[in-house]
Length: 279
Image (cartoon, rainbow, N blue to C red):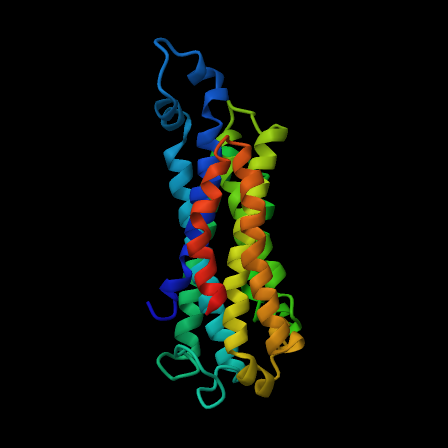
């Protein structure tokens, strides 16, 4: 449980919920449901249009990829000595703090990636084989973040990975598996814009989570030679980056919400937005 880093898991769950919600919001355009008799309320049409098994599989894939990536990070950083408890602050790590062996964490990583692969394979069978390259890329990106001979997380590229996979891919993919499941081919322009816009918002928030984590780790990462983006930017500019990533979603949110006719919801979230920025 410690290695899975439960407090980070909402970053995997929320894009699936939001991507599915985009599909739910477009449910009245599903002919098979829209033309039903007698006419159904909007929320009933939405539930009827969703494929709950695809939603569950997408959720399993997202959670398994997040947990497996956390194990991979713990395994690789522990072996490299990056998680030496004498050099870093923050929560203990399994390998670095001697709570588990590198071999044990590697087994946990492989098994969790396997869970993601099996659930993703089932999704591909139900939706289409175009999901396979995306799944392979996500697994590779999760491992090579801190694994392999030249981990891109050590080159300051971790933020790009998080924004892409925990923002755009997870959100748009969750919409896609609802609206492109064989009989329904509805990913037209407005559907793409709604899902992509929501993916950008969630990508910013997920990236902010990584940035503030790396901000904390600047001293230890500098000593261990881990050249994260935060190490390259320095403390002050990393804080500006964090604020920018937190502000951008709330600038974009009224426009995105406008696509669904609910633009007035955005200002209600201002108190949630301001607190972490002030801290």
